[in-house]
Length: 237
Image 1 (cartoon, rainbow, N blue to C red):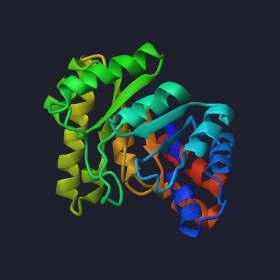
Image 2 (image 1 turned 180 degrees about the vertical axis):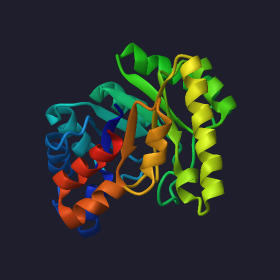
Image 3 (image 1 turned 90 degrees about the horizontal axis):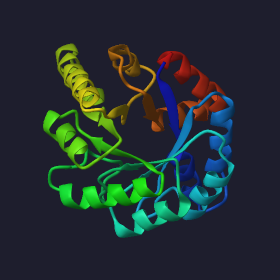
Image 4 (image 1 turned 60 degrees about the vertical axis):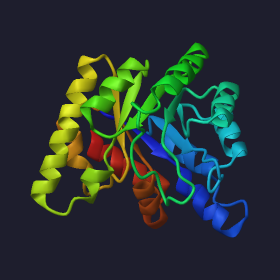
């Protein structure tokens, strides 16, 4: 059965909008765990637009499942990860002007740096995942640099408007899953997934964990975090 990692970044987005102490992403993570989430994901961005260092420090001490830290490939973030020791790190591309992560890493371009930094993280006992497009060459490069997992960027699939286009993107994801497994890589998926579009991706099989944030937080604003998480788990399982 596919696992659910709940991303609580946008609980922090609401908090930062007013510059006060609520809502608390740590409290949201605890509720998500109680509702059955298999892990908690946070993206500590370079500009600290939502999740703050203190949030990650408290989450590392308090959550009972697994902490997945999304982060850019920078010396600062590598140092933070080596100090905090999350269960896993997902390396993602990051731009200051983007609203959200807009695509996958170019692993081919960053091969030398990735190989070095992945080795450092793994030596500290951290599982390393690379956020990539469902592209066979990129997946081969993930294997070459020593990643443990890939996280398939599902955003393009989610943005498609026609049945034919969605079917084409699902086929790309299917081939990416197969290629990763043949190379011995674990497979996660995320970005843009919601209660309406996640089903066909789940039906492909072969994805260990779905990392979903915005849709769950949006639903939680209407029905509460516990119910929002349970409803997503029902769709995955």
